[in-house]
Length: 424
Image 1 (cartoon, helix red, strand yellow):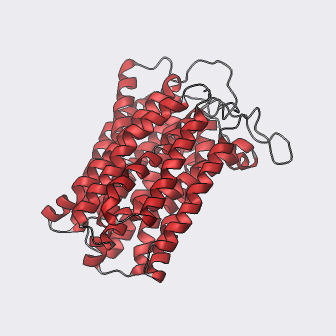
Image 2: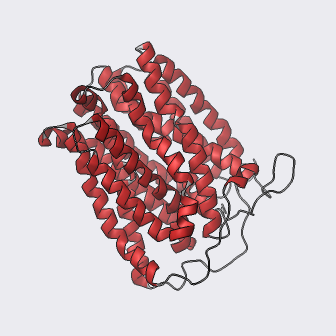
Image 3: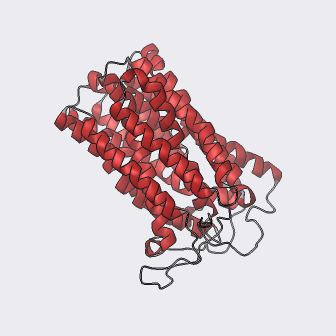
């Protein structure tokens, strides 16, 4: 079997985080936890309430298809600006700004209006986009010798926050008297992340280096095999994940499952993804086991989508478990991005191109599923197409884990900056 090394190794250098005060490192761990709790909460909370929001606000099928597509579209557009933003402000200040936008947008969605729902989602998800792209660089900068551990902590808290919100959001909205109020309440969680990250941003401001930050243009990386394969892997997992995250509770609701039960199944799916992601990282970190880890996650997604297509609503727990295991592929991709690059600038460049291009293409998933369901009145065709994408992820996972000795363009010419650091 081919080696599981996906990117070339780096020369041994001192970790970027070396020499930082212990208090700053501890604050960095706390910040990772608080940020992780927020990075899917606003999306999963909205997904669990989409059916109720449409009933109360009265918007039609086109808006119903647009709203779940806004996150991935914002991830693509706003995420593309992250490299420029981090170069101007620094990684820490860019993340703080993104958290302010996230909190403001989520609170804005609490206003019971279709316009405020859309506007708040655009603002909040644009902030989330910057944070998504910048976090691998933050981890690379502060925890270069512990990227797997910190990425695992980051993704574990991300899915934990989404799980808790998925389970509690419907009862919370009922207690508050409207789905909009329940959705807006998630913004309070984002405010805690702003406060938690503030010490890191202040420390970075006080100790900003006098030298100009290194800049690496992200887009030439799409002419390298490494850039292409990581972007392809990120695109397919994002398309599958956000299609499921956007529509899974809605699909159950249209099949007669109650809103609270749909939210519970949605929470189960995300709960399973927490240990699944940690397990997959542990498997992938072993010699020659990265490829089997990708196979396992992709096969679970394939079976889960097949279950959504063929199994009755009463089998939703099984489907939720399979899809939860499949969602665990996200930490594997993030570890590869966090370890790629000889410095923070290269990591940011690869993260920018993979997430911006990936999320732009992934928008087809939730938007297309919504339109197809509105046109056909059935989930059959959308799920058949999603099944084909899941099969494609198996192929890309195989190619992504082939040993790469040097990033090369299609014609065999080395292109772009050297990347490295994923050592299995």
